[in-house]
Amino acid sequence: MADKLKLYGKEFHSRLLVGTALYPSPAIMRESVAASGSEIITLSLRRQSPAQQQGKIIWDYIQESGCQLLPNTAGCKTPKEVIALAEMSREIFGTDWLKLEVIGDDYNLQPDPFGLIEAARELVQRGFKVLPYCTDDLVVCRKLLDVGCEVLMPWGSPIGTGRGLMNKYNLQTLRERLPDTPLIIDAGIGAPSQACEAMEMGFDAVLLNTAIAKAQNPVLMAESFRLAVQSGRAARNAGLMLKRQTASPSTPTLDMPFWQQTISAENGEKV
Amino acid sequence: MQLLVNGETKNFDSAQTLSEVLQKLGYSGETFAVAVNGDFVPRATYEQTSLNAGDSLDIVAPVVGG
Image (cartoon, each protein chain N blue to C red):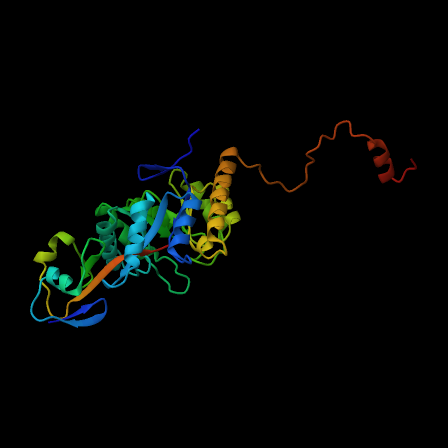
């Protein structure tokens, strides 16, 4: 049975989205993205002089990747900055998809919920398909849906920390209260086991960058994440057992040999 | 005319359109985008966009991102 990720009317086989930053080299970045199986990659825009060549390197890769591009607004702190950068992204990358970031705190790069909602409202009105990087606050998430976002990307933990799913209660609440909204865990994932756990919890996809790019072997780590996300999704679809407090034997107890002697011994009787 | 280009002060001989300034700075192709004083300027309007002394230009290009 097809189990595709559906975002803004497009379907994807992969449920792993990856960033393109922090790799040891452009070649390792390309190889890692391929190993991840990702069909959606994040990018950005920065000031550049004509003499700088990084723009050309990433542009050449974009042309050949075949991936859905997801430009971000990383570093923006106000809706005005976001709108300008979003429009520049749309012109250059030729897509109205946008990973919306409005940073509210430099220390933990926490999204500014007020700026996020204001910017999302304006961007949706301008025709952007907005994927907001947000906190795990249910009310903020609802407001983002109200202004027209169709996908939400709550953080697992702050960007680049590798701390995994920091507040599972909030995340579980989001999943339960927004059952029909595509939810992508974005940021803070440090290990494939954490990505797997997010998928087991029912999240639709995972977006990460640092955990792959900063691994000793990024290509192998990308493959590890691909497998972990697939495994977690399959487990979610299969249906996890319920946790319980007391042990329960998995081997049948009926017709267990020696049981009379064991009970007698436990009662202090001579056998 | 003095302009602030990506945070650096640059001088130009006379009043210029955005299109002329970009050409003098060496920008070509379609892998860059421009904002003037923080507002996006669509590529199709570069020739009609007049610049004033003190204007601030942000010229950006694709980079890797997370």
